[in-house]
Length: 254
Length: 241
Image (tube, rainbow over all chains, first blue to last red; front, side, top):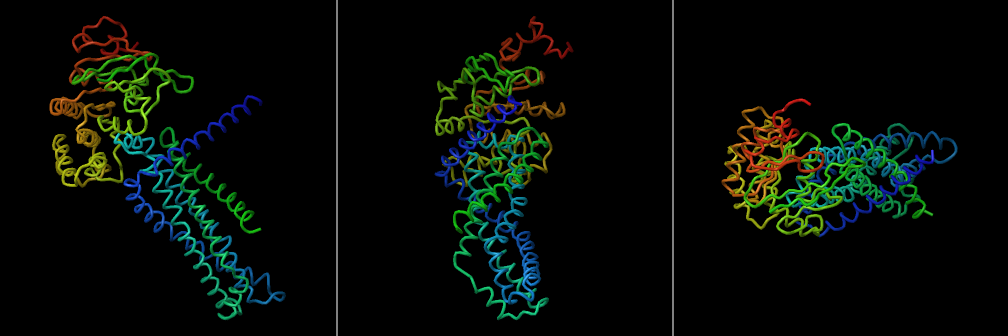
């Protein structure tokens, strides 16, 4: 028991050390703009365009469900135009960033861990180094930059989609008019609602892509190792995303 | 000149290299033979700083690899071509881009890069394969692209990690001829890691056997073929214990 505890403590300390080492290497690679600048454009397209359908799909249905649940909760007690308030606030502050983030942890984080893991076990990462490339500037910086930049854009579009589908559901399925929905939407709106959600999304994008890269480049073994890394990347990203979500609420919304 | 000086390396509790010492003079090709898992590839990866030794070092042209700063290590790597066991080609890049990748780290114009890529592909008889992706190539072709990628850099040193493993005898012979031709063409110093004895006899000026983390015997092809060391004898004859 004590031995196992000791081993876990040592492993945890080693993991912190590896993380510090990784971040140090990452910082050292930043001046290598010639390499990561060109590759970032490719990653922006991959992270952005490829992730958009899943984020919008989730947001579209979330908007509808939110409108229906709000109407169910408010009926006969609260004016129905509050449906617009609930759909808008919830999409902007929480569900837009978090649901899209969780979906993209599966979509983007897993794909990065699998890709880099495969490159690692097939010695492509070693090959990069022998060709005088720094894997951090060739592989990590473009992905992390793309995630941090594109996540807020994807989430912004997801929020808009959720609000639109919530509005359409309100018109089609509830006794609500467009002016009433917009009245509710504007009621408690503050500009902070917008930037808070988007800022949070940027930190989610940074975290998910960084975890995907760290886990991917730490892959050992063959196909089994790649599978393990892929699963780890999704689990770690999802957990960290929820912790970050609570952290930002505590820091910025109190 | 490359010198392995009393190199020690362990993975966990398992020692792999335990005082590996070997000198590779300029313009010579030394073949390192040995059983699978005895640390041949591990020794090779120390030359380009992909692994850090626990003790000892590899000295390349008087520079101790493990002590080099990042920039100096990058500069050293520009002098060394590394051919990986399974070629390690980048799946998302065409053959042309795979070969050109290392050249893009040098001050070369696009025309010069294209010329060097065409030249390297011609040396490995792969002219016309520029637009193919690695997935479209056979194992032998992938290895040849790996060699083209290394020689396109016009390195002073070429390191081959199991260049004929997994290939049929005819393709292996083609790769052997290619290694000999490359040495003649570029005049490079080479280290070849293999357990294919036919290949070792064809490409090596000298052969060193790695056994239990150290060099068991080193000598010319003729000396190794006539060895009376029972361990080396058993290995080169492929006799079971």
